[in-house]
Image 1 (cartoon, one colour):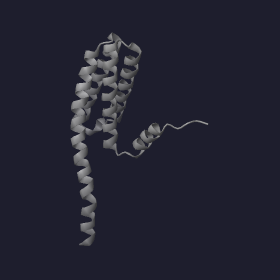
Image 2: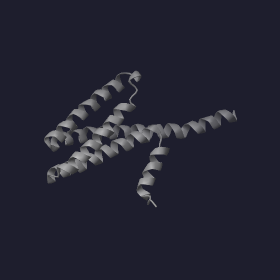
Image 3: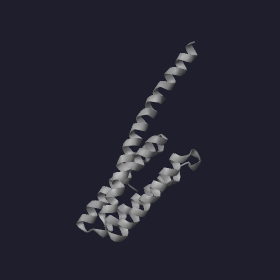
Length: 140
């Protein structure tokens, strides 16, 4: 009989039920968390842990790249170029076992996370108002 890890089950359910903006936030947070682990591992000279965490971060950035709708315009293209740059910096960090490129990417992701958190707040506020507006229209 296989034991189900409650934390893994919670994460699976959270990702399956999250809205698209929340999923992006989860990806950013995961990437930042993995980079923190990678940087600490590089300081300890734990190449194996650093490699694992950097590859996880590269996979997350690849997922972020894959979710972009490049037909949406210049912003999507700029994000794609930024993610591509991050991928190259993460590869360099992993090849050279150098924390500096990883820290650079973590800083960029942290800045982007703050922007996405603000966007998420506005998105949630707009969604909260929308049902109220529908109710007002229906009452008229």
